Length: 412
Image (cartoon, rainbow, N blue to C red; front, side, top):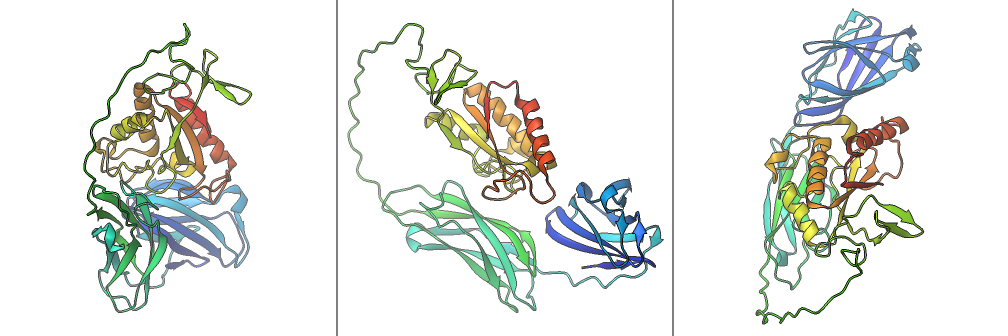
């Protein structure tokens, strides 16, 4: 990583992670003599959207000036004060200009550019047993290249259609390709062609150029001969006057919760009439990880998916999110199936979901699933650069934003 030197201090710049249009950088300020207060001037062609352990004093064009915070102003001789930032708009190109007002002299030579790795789409029949995605390097590497990936369910589901994966593939030194194999499940049930995604989540020895691919699973099973339509009859019914849906569970046709607000009594959830209701919620994951949006929007429009949830008998949606995605407020990815959401942030997509939930009558339960973006649940309200205050800030933001909505009924 670049090491920039001035007469009295050095600055070590390390790119922790980068992607098309952004990066996470860690910088270490290392004085030769003890200092009380320090500044660093550098150029970055993108925009700093989040910074920790330092504050921005000024920005002129691409030139940033940052300084210490109160707790890390004093650094002993030979010691280190670390800070970092998340940048958007450029995935490299951090150049130091001055340290404590002294121009930077020389720097270690920039490392040779890394090869670029891409993944291609794949098609296989479920009876093939596996589907192979081609990983390709732009040029051979002198060392092994390790690529990390994860699978993301679409119309094809993990477990029943394919084996969920969160693993690594190695492209040996001197070679430019390898096959990323995902096991398929073969059953006797006839199915339409289904899809899932493979996302490259990181690479050692290479940079990611094209990090997402679609796998299509075809099926040759033949559907059985159709059976005659059943005969339908309608019987008499009765209901207590004043109880329009026969038990307070909502609209008699859809099961929607129509009489709010809700309250509790013992182990019962009650509507505004005091009638017991049942919350039948579907988990709609995705806004807690690095795509920043509920899953499936790469394939289908939001309204179509929510309409199906109601048709399937659900009356609520548990909507997981990460505090990082709420506070960073960066554009979501993987929403190609709903062009109306292109360029929107996690919060703006939540606005659309809440508005449409009010329109069709389904309810929303907000779920702080993680503090930082990722898969699975962290189970704590602080992690990395985020603390308890950030967790509280995210919840206050959501409460102020949706507190008057009839659709939002709970916080998890």
